[in-house]
Length: 100
Image (cartoon, rainbow, N blue to C red; front, side, top):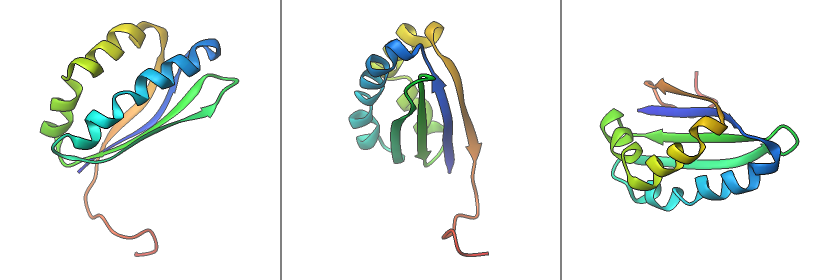
């Protein structure tokens, strides 16, 4: 499993527009083969930060989603305007939080 997690930072004046456009990709993600979870939310409006959290079955599923026209357009438009501190993690040994 792959976990995508972290913050994206944009100019606070553009945060609402960015979040709206980022959220427009969520319906496509949720129906994509291999998407296990996908969410984003404004974290701190004053610093222009948004939290991203995603779970994907594997790299193939994530790569297919990232290659969709909406996602490519989002990065083409916002890539140079954002500081992307989102990271990808390979996960194994999935279990409930209280399990050792």
